[in-house]
Length: 505
Image (cartoon, rainbow, N blue to C red; front, side):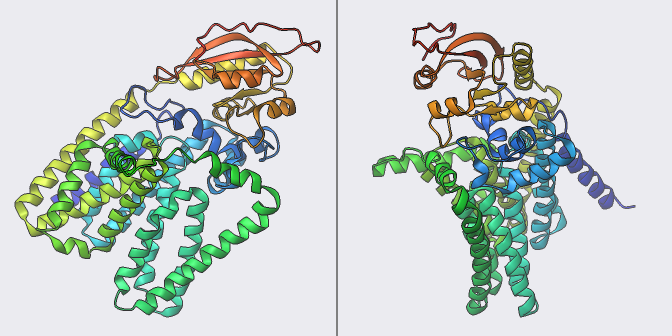
């Protein structure tokens, strides 16, 4: 066996080890005191898997008046529903599913790069993704981004095959498959709309001299996606859940700038947010893209390179338009930035060998630094939130108070961890007083402080007694999960004073 083969096997084994580390301590919290503060660690795992969780906890996936995300985004909860049939509801199972998707993303990234470049380039790009400490954190949460990345990479791979298909029938068949996958992307996370240019470019470039052929293929893809989505909406959503569907998009609208200067600032911060991924690698990618304009213009004839840039630009546009900069959104950006870096390094090596060698050496250093931080996260797991959820559930079970039901913005996450039934206090198609009357929870939990508006709504039917506080997470605004017992107000309307010991904001 020669040295090159030994090096190849060692490299593959190293990537496999990095991927395997993602499966360690799946109950652990999102790493505390990391560089990323993202609200998804408090809520999103429960919210976006709520339909699957509720099906096994309550017997029905739909909770009238609550925050029913699955109406708009059914793909991820469906996958969890299938999984929970075999594993039962647990945060470990949900996260194991996400990490499994991440491993598939590594294989798809390799396949995409290998379709356009040599094996070492594909391994380099895969190494960047596998070692990334940023992706380690966000690929271990049962959120939507990893699955969206998987479907996007799969779409790019199929688009490339469809564009060069040897027969018209094969091209149409692949276009239908592409339309089906794109519909799944939209039903996984609606930000898939901003990834469409990247997919269309991969479909167009190989057949750019045959515009009619491209238009036919794109039309078949669009028709397939449109028909499937239309059938889903018209047959299921519109007759039964249109109120929940509209509500989902209504609550995801954030205040947007009203001036040109405001929009400029918003998009500056949208692009600046990419530095969350890895400040050094993102700056290197920017330098490499700039260098490609002068040193290796041939790189722009690589459809994967341009598609990756379009995916990054599309997500920058979404984050700026959405005006809600959260690190998890940049998980999609991270993967395509890493593809750009790997492709650029290979092109530089061919076009300007000293620059290429320097860039590859720099990339290897970044991979090692990320791997070291990932290893630190693996070796120092914390379990404050799962322990808080379990202790909260134990307290409720040992101190019954009417209906065994918790109301909390993090309630769905707690249900995923412990099985304690819950409803959300912040989001839902029914206003909070109506939800209180319909579900009559026995307990309420908040983070650190009570919102005055929420307290006012609770006071329409209950007075609160603070009974326990549980430490969790590292955010100074959300590091104490405070549990309150809900006591129904007397029928005679007597004023009762809450027994609350935390600061009211």
